[in-house]
Length: 115
Image (cartoon, rainbow, N blue to C red):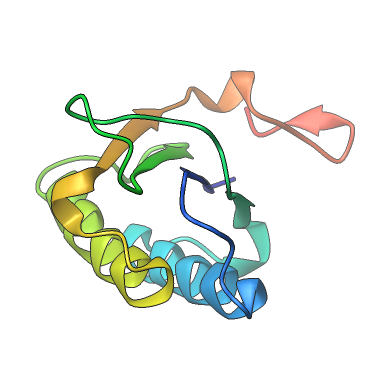
């Protein structure tokens, strides 16, 4: 049910699976969700600009049923930015993270919804 989608103008890393697996573990741990429900996506080489500049940047979306309360979005932003910088070389100041809490009734899986 948690989903993290990374869109970046940077090239894909030599080992994209390592990035995706680290994001999966990070998201599951920070949100307190079972990793078996976490989905990760990477879209690299996407044309984009940030601050009027075409230097590599990232736009990260996180969607989850709950668990985005309190300080978690801030923690998530910090942790994801570190992973992105380590794997893609894109600094935190060039990464936006958009976190959305989705109602369980609007999240489908296995031919049904979670609520």
